[in-house]
Length: 82
Image (cartoon, rainbow, N blue to C red; front, side):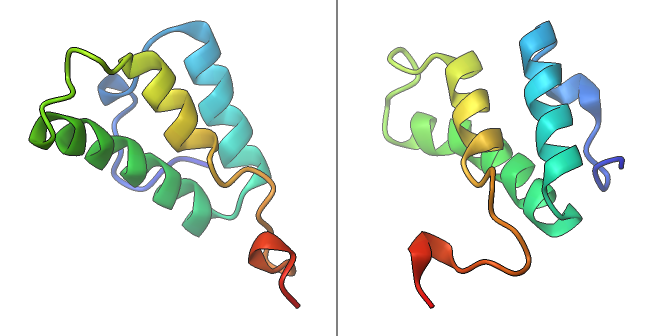
């Protein structure tokens, strides 16, 4: 599945980053996968707004944002709630 209008060139080029993105797009619904990539797009802007750009490792930020909902499925509830 390709992410909607998200150029891969805008994402980190490290092989593990591609693996993380591929895992997200193969395991999550398109809605959740796109949400995860949008999180990556906004996270550096938030870091800049809070003057944290010198403290943020963008590669780790990418991994955290792209994988933050891994395991969320259509038929499950967040945090184990019924």
